[in-house]
Image (cartoon, rainbow, N blue to C red; front, side, top):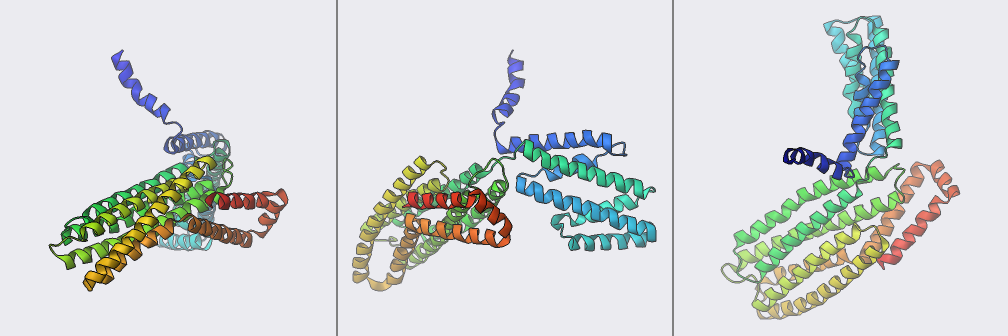
Length: 417
C-alpha cells in the first residue's frame, strides 16, 4: 500500500497541476504532434512521415498569436526550400559546389520571403529534398507533411485554446515589486544609523541588479501580451495588455529612481565618514518614509494585476491611503531637512536629492498619474490599430466592439479616480 501511494504521488501532483500553463502547453503539443503523425501516415507517400509531427510541434507555440504567425512562416519556408531544390535538381544536380550555391540561394530566398527565424529551414528543406534521387516524390511528400502539421497545429488552438499567461505575468510584476520593497526597507534601516560607504555601495549594486529582474518580467509580460492576441477565450485583451505594460513601465521608473537614491546614499556615506548617515530625527523619518513607499509599491503592483473590479477598488483605496500617509511623512522630512541644512549646509545638495528622489517615486505611483498614462496608451494603441487595419476597424465599429472598448476605458478611468 505504501509503494502504491509512493508511485501515485507524482501522478496526482501532475493531475493537480493540470490547469497550469506549462502542463497545458505540454499536453497540447503532444496531442498535436500525435494527431499530425496519424494523419500523415494516411496521406503522405513516405513510410515514416516525421515532418508532420515535427511541424505540428513547432507550430503549436505557447500562444495562439505565435502559433498562427509561426505556422504561416514555417509553411512558407518549407515550400520555398522545396522549390529551390527542384530548380537546382533540374539545372545542375547535386555536387559539392551546387550544394554551396543551394545553401546561399536558399538563405537569400528565406530573407526575401520574410520567414524570420525560419530562414535556416529553407536551406534545410532544400538540402533534404535535393539529397534524394526522386526529387519530385520527396518534394511532394515534404510539402504534404508540412501542411498537415501546420493545419493540425492551428486546429489544436481552436479546439484546445492555448493558456493565457496573464496570471504568470502578474506574479512576475508582484515579485519585482516585493524585491523593490525589500531593498527599500534595508536602505531605510541603514539610513537611521551609521552606515559604512561600502555597505551603502552594496545597496547600490542591489539596485542595479534589479535591471535583470525587469528584463525577466518584461519577457513574461511579452508572453502574456501574445497570449491575449487572437485568443477566443479572452475579452478586453487590449485593456489587459495596456494595464500590465503601463504598470511595468511605472515600476521600471521607480527602480531607476531607487538606484539614483542608492547612489545618493553612497555619496552621503562617503562624505559623512564615521558619522551617522542622517541625524537621528531625520534618519528615523527617512526610514519611516521608505517603509511607507515600499508598501505603496507592492499595493501598486497588486492594483495593476487585479482583474475583478471590486478587488481593484479596494486595492486602489489601499494605495491611495498609503500614498497620502507617505506624502505627509515626506512633508515632515522636508521640514527636518530644511532645519538640518540651515545648521549645516555642507551636504545640502545630497539632502535635497534625497527629497527629490522620494518625491518622484510618490508621483509615479499616484493613481491620477496612472489613469492619465493608461488613457494615453489606450488612445495611442487604438490609433495604431486603426492605422494598420482600417477595414478591421470598420467591421469592429459595425459590430459594436469599438463602443464596448470605449465603455471599458471610461470604466477604468472612473475606478482609477
